[in-house]
Image (tube, rainbow, N blue to C red; front, side, top):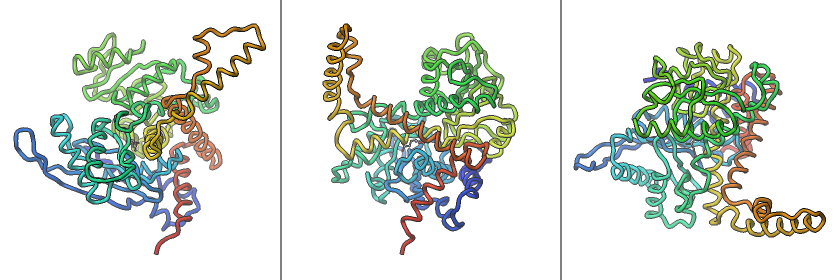
Length: 468
Ligand code: GLU
């Protein structure tokens, strides 16, 4: 059990940034606090007839924009403090990437491995029922999504439960990260990892920052280590590899492996599926301690598992020059100071892993609009491009082949638009943070990100007025 109080860690980062803003103490306190905390217990019948009491939470950190938004975590380590911290991070995250939602988070204290699929379904449906009963879910109120331990399957159960109980034309917008057939969106599964990649790419493209680290500009040729090969870690590693970076180390629950010649991601995933472990894969060597990959030699370290992984205990030994926080809260505030002292560039969670909620926002828009992206424009665009290509052919000796015509005249489909919207969002948000870093003469992107988030939320509060 970690000795770090997660919510306190988040608030320390908030306070560090708050001094650079113009808001009075009271308003800052209002931004920081969790507005509503719902704690629930309920019974669930096990397959063998026994009854388990399940504990869950839903925290709405800030309702300055509605709906509130954030995933639901299933983990035996979930507690109120963790859910509050994660809800707060969601508010700041949404503000940074201009997603018009307040922050929320849910947690159910179970180890998913201890339950069968039908037990998990009963838990999920009952938890959803409790949320509905107390007004903690709805397309305009609070919209859950996947997080650690949950995925599209659970989101499908949540939607179905909601639909059974509510006559709501926008019911599909009550949860995101759903299966495509149930109002989900193409590109949501990979969105967080894809966003992590875009964020790292942006950071690596800033010449002065790379120079200060003694690194070349660009992602290509850089080595990286990833902690956690779940949905986020896997996709981040996949896109980085495709861009020419080399995965040299992996940490998972069973231990750490390292191979300076590079580790093949797909083969490793297959190997783990077959053997239940990453240990013994290919030519890699097993490191002495379970999370030693965190302190292995590499350019980019990507903690993509849980909070409080890089702490005052191991931060001194971290060798990576770039810490890319794909997880929420992986670096404690004392570790942050140690890393900063050493001159490392920390890409903060509030920015770097926001891709998930960005694409959740696109999914929610699709659901309340009741139309798939690209449906109205794809064919129209293709016809227009073909007309232009015909004109070009007429003006030159060039005749396009059928294949070239297909390529050049491709209209954007849902995936293309989602991906492009995500890329644009991650680029713009990084630029904003870098500008604030410059404006305040900071060396620290986390503080810059918090300043940006506090400013955006603070202005909302000012404009809202305080009632009654
Ligand atoms: N659980 C994800 C996160 O921590 C996604 C939240 C969402 O899409 O609402 O950002």
